[in-house]
Each structure stands twice: as structure tokens, then as C-alpha cells.
Length: 404
Image (cartoon, rainbow, N blue to C red; front, side, top):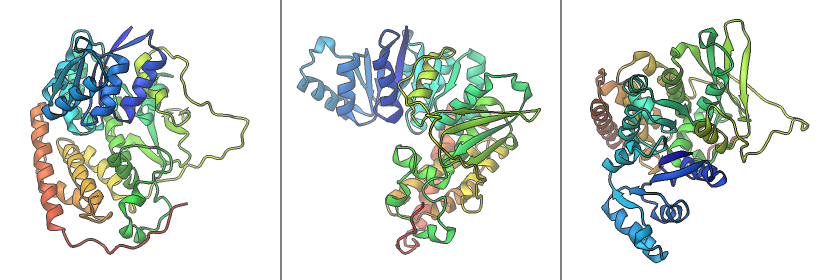
């Protein structure tokens, strides 16, 4: 039986993870849950899964959570240990009882706990992009040194992981990651300056959090995935390609030196890669739809437009540069996306803020998690300054042509 700590239990990955657990209770038990401020959902999860510990963002959240458990009539003798703040995340990730950590907290908040889990040799189901985008070298050195088992949950990297099981890694020449193209795949670049947050949040395939949905619209998310793939599978950026695949059925492909290409294909349901990460190297029946090969279907594969989506190109450049560049890239993007969603900057200014931040923050070679967090903080401050300086320079609002 696997014993889990779920970092980010109330988000999309966390709730899907608990659905996998719910359907296979004889194989999994939950040791700890960590959430941000959604104490209502966390309280319901505590009632159902009976963890030993639960972590929320701050002491005020602990008080609200305690009130919810009291209202639910749960006797105090059955309460988990209630903790607040960032430090307890590490405590529940490294607990001796835990063998598997699902890292699904959005942002660098989840980096120290996930790193600590790697240093304890845990299995890590990784869905937190910042772990590798911001701290790839430091984190992967810990994975190798302490023998941690790292299985990606993100659908593209999970697909690549599955494909790479089919042969000798030394015989693989290229990795191909697919992207839906987002809501603006067919929108002319000149119309993108009029995009509203509401339009950018209409992803054609996946239902995700706000930041990752905007990143999918700009293809920044795919740029992050290129960076992650380089660290996960030891590829050079030049060996990782991105293709636009609007149907989102093929998640990843690998090309061997002889030209053979293997693809991982499945329905767009995150429970499959989550279950794979929890049960690897075994495969179990999964509660996901099967593709019906009796139905007529058409799949498209198109090259990305690097001029229309400059953040994708910038991600390649940052991974090539190495050092702290990708950490700054992530931090600046988070601030810029937040500013866009708050109506402070226009859609096209997201990439401008990110590029300008990279020019303002000197690159360095982080050696510790503390170094990474320092670069992250400096980069955020620089990006906030650029957002403030851009105030009043937003493009006029207008209706953008809807994608087809």
C-alpha cells in the first residue's frame, strides 16, 4: 500500500489524485493534505480521507478549517494535526510514514518541500512546473544523489515517460511535445492586442487554473514544458520540438535514431497520468474514457508560430543560456499574467514584461534552494516595477476575432 502526501489537494491535480485514491482505497492511503485557502473543500477531503495532518496557507486558515470541522461534527479525537504556513509543507513531505509525494502546488511555494522529499528518496509525482523550471539543476542533482523516484504527472511529460520505456534512451534522437495551440491559434497577431482576460481563459481542450490557462494561450506553458523535458529526460533544447495538435489526443512522441517514431495517445483525462505516476511500473485499469477507433477522426500537426507566440522562443533561449534565466522567466511570467488578469496590462504586454525582466535581472548560477528563491524574489520585484511603469499604456479594448 502506498502512503501519500498530496501538496495542493484542492486544485485540479489534487482533486483528481484523490479521485484515483477513492477508486482504489485498498492500495492507497492519505497521510497528509495541503491546500491554500480553500478550507471548505479541504474540510470535505479530511472527512472523507482521514489524513493524519492537514496544512493551509496561514494561521487564519487553520482557524477557519477548525471551524469547518467543528461544524461538520467531526470529534476532535479524529481531527488531523492542523498546520499553517510554508514550513509544515516540508514536514508532511518528508514524514517517515510517507513513500509518495504528489507535488501539485502552483508556484515556487512547493519547491522547498518537493526538494526535501527528493533528499529523502521519496517517489515524487511531479505536477509543479516551478520545481524544474526554477530549480531544475539543483533539484535533479538531489534526485540523483538520494535515489528519489521522479514520475511526471503533466500529460506531455507523462506521455514521454511512457514512450521512453519502449527502448534504449541512448537510441532516442528527439522528443516531440504537442500543444493544442490555445484559443488564439487562428487569431491574426494584429488582433491579439485587443484580447481580454475572459477570451484568453477559454481554453479549447483543458479546464485548468487561471495562470496555466493564460500560459497555454501564450504558449508559455509549452515553453515551460520544453524546459522541464530537458531536465527530466536529459535532452538538449535543440532535441525537443513542439508541434501544434489541436485535437490533444497525442500527448508526446519520441523519435529514434533510425527514424522510427513512437507516440503516447489517450483521452484528455488527467486521472490516467496521475494513476500511472502512483502505480509505475505497473499499469492498472483507469477510470478514463477509451478512444473509439471505429469513429472517423482527423488529427492535425502544425508547426508553432514563434513570431506570434514569442514566449515559446524565449523559453528555448533561457534553457540554452542556463543558470537562473529560467527562474527569472517563470517569476516574470507569473507577475505579468497576474497583471493581465487584473486589467493592468494588455495581452501582448505579457511577453514584453517577461523579456524586459530578463534584461534587468543578471543571470547567475544558483547552488541552493535559497539561491533560487532569492532570484525568484528579485525577478518578481523587477517585473512588478515594469508593470507599474507600463500603467496607462494598455491597448484600447475591442473585440478580438474568435478562434475557430
